[in-house]
Amino acid sequence: MSISNSDYSKMTDKASPNSPVLKNCIKAFIFGGGICAFSQILNFIFQSSGLSEEAIKLATPCVIIIITAFLTGIGVYDKIARHAGAGTIVPISGFANAVVSPALEFRHEGYILGTAAQMFSIAGPVIVYGTASSVIYGFIYYLATK
Picture (tube, helix red, strand yellow):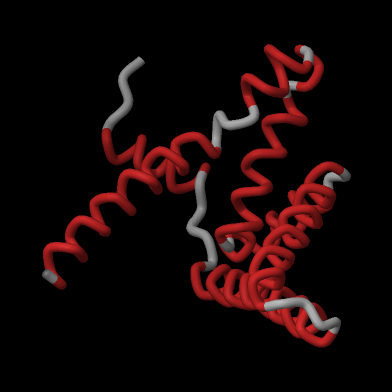
């Protein structure tokens, strides 16, 4: 059975309709902004409790990571991500989700070969390429300011 290119194109267009780009961008902006606003509220709470600036810089991301990991563990973060799209990939919360999700998915294979081995299957490339790009950026910055 042979199918023409135009027929194949029609089939793929029917099977994968276009997504509402503007609606998705607005949702991502609102949810991502909400995560950032919540982080800022945490900053204000920590400041008002008398923590030092250094402690605040450590406490805020830790709380966001713990909340994201907890919400991922109970299945809520993925439901939020279905609606928020890219808005949930705000760096620290998205990274926490990327570490916890595979760890949960492969936990039935055991702690070593399942959870530990697969934990960084999604986040690993982000670490590698993020580190490599930051080194390149630092080198360029060094050369530009020298």
